[in-house]
Amino acid sequence: MTGDPRPISVRARQALERELADLRAERATVAATLRDADAPGDVADQADELQRVTQLGRLDDRIAAIDVRLRQAADAGPPSTDAVSVGSTVTVRFADGGEETVRLGEMAEEADRTLVTADSPLGRALLGRRAGDTVDFDAPDGRSSVTVLSLGDPGDPRGDEPREGA
Image (cartoon, rainbow, N blue to C red; front, side, top):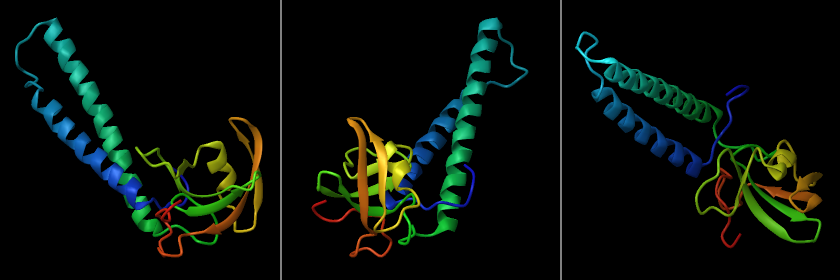
């Protein structure tokens, strides 16, 4: 994860914290199965041991990445209400006149229909935009445009939660 620290939504933070707890529990379980390096064993035992060591390495890498992301988010503070960034709540008007309030996030979250990921076509088009900006993007149905009406939720100064009824 490069660049300036980026804020994350409350929901994304909670999802990362849950994943981190699960990974740490899994790591403890895998680590408990490792044998003493001097213990006797055949080639199959050694191969199994090597596989668990490799699994520990992958778990350690993901744990470290989540730790860094959570620290960066804490350093970044709340999302900006001047320009769209990860964690922003944005009200937009589509070319057909329909309006929607969406939340820009890093990762998909279960049962969150208001979330637009930052790496989606709409998410990439919105990043860095301000209220009043109109941008074009490639939608699944073809080229489309959207106008940013507002940033942040008037009822939530952090701007990281969707509005009621959105």
